[in-house]
Length: 101
Image (cartoon, rainbow, N blue to C red; front, side, top):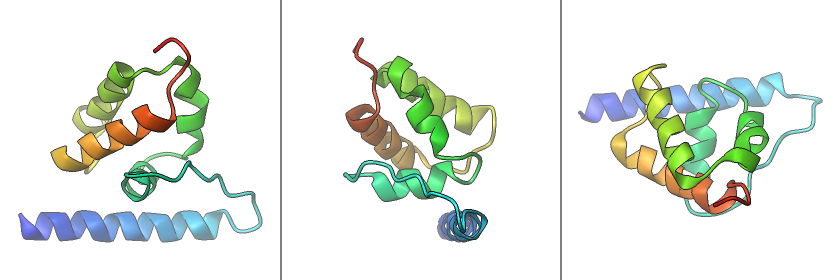
């Protein structure tokens, strides 16, 4: 289990470094600060731009974020632990939900 967690951490770090290099000279998207920010930024960029969070926010609710994170893990194989998934959903629900919630 320890090796798996270490591998996930190393993958996140590598992805973050690649994203930082790829964005050189471009405006860097910054998500709201708050509990879970670091887990979200390092986990989500492994597969897609953080732009998706802000683009989807107007139509999202807690339940939709939960379903979306679950889909990323189950369907797309995102290397996110159950503990991190909860942190991600809580962060997204606190900062990026639409008016209908």
